[in-house]
Amino acid sequence: QVQLVESGGGLVQAGGSLRLSCAASGRAFNSYTMGWFRQAPGKEREFVAAMGWTGGYIVYADSVKGRFTISRDDAKSTVYLHMNSLKPEDTAIYYCARRTRFIGTYFDDSEYGDWGQGTQVTVSS
Image (cartoon, rainbow, N blue to C red; front, side):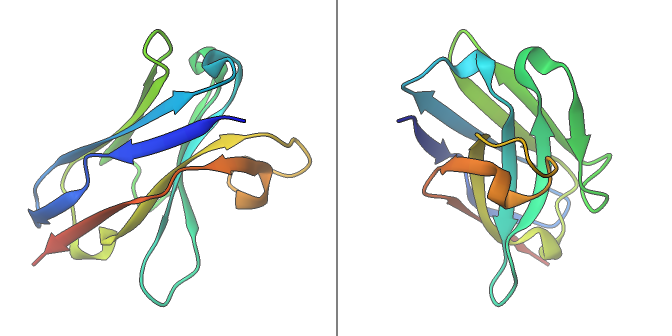
């Protein structure tokens, strides 16, 4: 069982930046695709970004492309989400997750079996 712990959320003004971190413990970190999802109040959880093991592929939701960057440090078993040019519509709880199934696609949250507790990001206008 892997444990994922997010940090780095907070309150920021529109146009600002934040860096989220997700520290993993347990099984070999560098063998798994890691993803970031978010859930805004009253909305379903949505895909934000994913990065394959050893950084083999990187994908983003259209809504964050060009503003957010996912990265990972396998030596530290940590994945990051660098968020720039934040908008009020980015306000959500952000979750990191480890992909454990390969039936669907990387943006399907049912593919991810391990989840962190989430970190709140609030962007004021």
